[in-house]
Image (cartoon, rainbow, N blue to C red):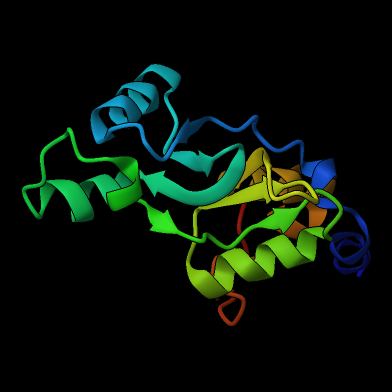
Length: 155
């Protein structure tokens, strides 16, 4: 299977991660919501002195701010997910897939060797890569690999 080899060999850089949208952890939740809405993104990377310290997602907004009735003036440092799992640009695509799958993450920060954000990977971007590079493998799968139609399709 060629696609299995490719995701072990090709680096995360090949996925063209989305440029990072980042705020300092001293910013407020209101600032973060404004950026999320203006940029139409589902997450922001949170930094201190340029280094990644956390991630703030729509889910964080719902569960850590709105559900607990915290004010929108709350600092991001008190509402973010600290120490997010990340990948380096040179890590294989497989590493990103495994980390996203094992943690149930929809977004994964991409960092450089100094832990500075250089991008964000989304599950959508990985699926798009797989479909674009291996269409026969993706499109030729039945909805349930164990189920096959009892009659032929078509005329």
